[in-house]
Image (tube, rainbow, N blue to C red; front, side, top):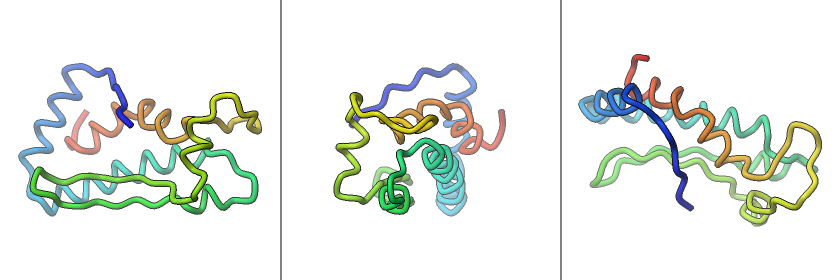
Length: 117
């Protein structure tokens, strides 16, 4: 699933700063940024019995192309709930419970990764 994010000069500048960091520091900042998105997602994920919310997992991996962050909901039905825009949810809960918080926190993630505003 691809997510389009709008941003400006500060986001680009902070991401360039991030690329210049050591791998250890990149991993730490990526973990912090992912945990911020996960925190925001946990606030809006639909909760019935808690299985979906409790299935969330965050990983930071180092690949040949750089450090990558992964935020996943591992419940078998997570993708269905995420994409079902017709479902009724309790107030404050919604579909797109991972994509929305990621888009909403673009500037915060770039600040964390770059280390500055």
